[in-house]
Image: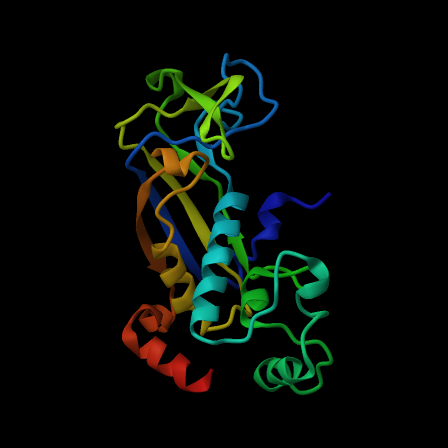
Length: 247
């Protein structure tokens, strides 16, 4: 059996990003199949009954935003989430594109090479160098009454409400200004040029959970980067000036 605390290599990793997600509206992070609520889609909670935003959701959104930024900067990245089109296989790439990957990412004495995004978030052949905590709201569940929000399925073709398609969502209380707290642990081997990309992508995430177009899940971030070395300067303009000429 492997203790969960050993999955994070704290002995060698001195870098973390402390995150606080400040929820500006009601939040709807649904837990399909959950019981104990009248809602068709109850909100997800941990074993103590506290509201949370799953680490997997934050990681997926961050990877997506990093990919968009990297493509906008004309960097070579693979095509997720299909395993065969991701590194190291990259099926479907032209010989010219594969040659660009090789020039940018292949190191001496290594047959396999991975794009910057895969070096950060991992792929089927490479472990992630970012470990995410769940974002947990420390507010007592007794102070957060159940909030049920009705909705109806829309027929996109007819642009009308579907008959007999009323449903109910459980959300956090609106206008409660809840704080969801967690950390991102940066593991050894994380590429230095990925750090400004990670922070820039985080700033692009303005909402999480479901029904964002209906006004749910909108938020803003407070974060603090912790490191015992000199890499704190990765968030300033010097880091971007270092990146752009080499890509």
